[in-house]
Image (cartoon, rainbow, N blue to C red; front, side, top):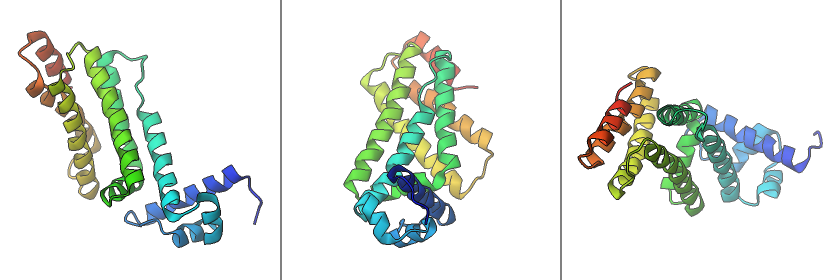
Length: 206
């Protein structure tokens, strides 16, 4: 076995975990399966991660960091294009690595407090960017508007998970639904401000 630096060995094991999830999206990331995929002993995996829970958390933490990096706002774009680009980036990140996203949701739903906290922070960061982008468009971020943005995030997550099991529309249509639904939902949360409603109507159509 080639001697690798600790950071290289950790990355080797994390890469193996991604391959395990690609083969079986519903895998519980057992130490034995990942160790076998990585070509190391379970004892070595425990040496680098400490426990099964800490190992699983490291897998999810890496996936969350990559997703947030990918979906960070592109400040060089106009506000409406920045918002659309961020939504499409989120959709792309989920669809291109669905196994990791499913694993995050499954471990969160199973009650793992560390993963649940990480998932909540990931959602809060992304939705926080959406709220900030909506404010940049000139829409007042009232409590109702903020609540609608968080509700929209849940809609998008469930829509993507359903599509992964049954891709009944093409990807372009899926992205359009995710984008335009935000403007339509925010219309129900805004006061009767004609200028704001015009902004959101533009957001609700491509």
